[in-house]
Amino acid sequence: MGNCGGFASFPKGRFPDNNLVVFVAYRCEKLEALPSGIHILSSLSIHDCPNIQLFEEGLATKLAKLTISDRKQYKALMELGWHNLTSLTDLYISGKRDGETLHEEDMRITLPRSLTWMSIEDFPNLKYLSFKDFECLPSLENLQIWFCPELTSLPSLPPSLLQLHVRGCPLLTEACKRDKGKEWSKIADIPRVELSSTLMTKRY
Image (tube, rainbow, N blue to C red; front, top):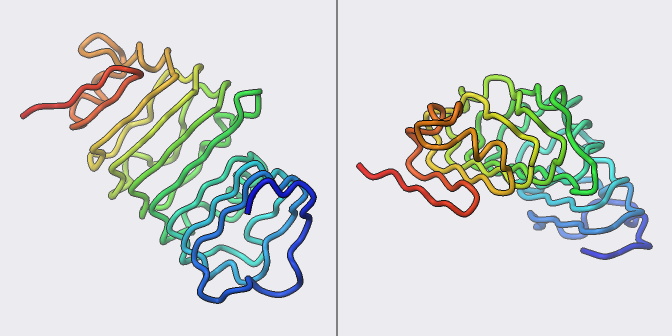
């Protein structure tokens, strides 16, 4: 469902279809809550729905894919414990280029060890990624960082990482220059690295 500016709530009850596994909400500014039964979902995407309260029933343990674009929702998950999303494989976190951002203290979280793909996008003031034990994520293969112009460094990266994509992050791109940049040693062994418009593929 999308562009439902006047939609404030679902009818009382559960999701209308017990076979529903994917739910997307886009630009529903007045929507405050999802129906009960969120635990049945395997994929949840919430875009530009600033008032929605996630996981009022607790964590969705079957959730494999999650997209959120609001700091309020991110903070709510911090309280519940990101690491408790034990089935999560794909995580997309975005902000807004008009100023909404996460801060370094918001990043001091332990992520689910099940993650294989992660994207961070549109945080104009973010300077560091201070995730806890990021290098210990055993399954992370793809990391995407877009449009974080103040970002200057990477965390220690897990050896499982196969692809790194960085766009719109000029300071980080400079720091990752081959052999010269202070972050080069962190990415030198990643098979595929994309920095802005430059694509580098490691050859063996």
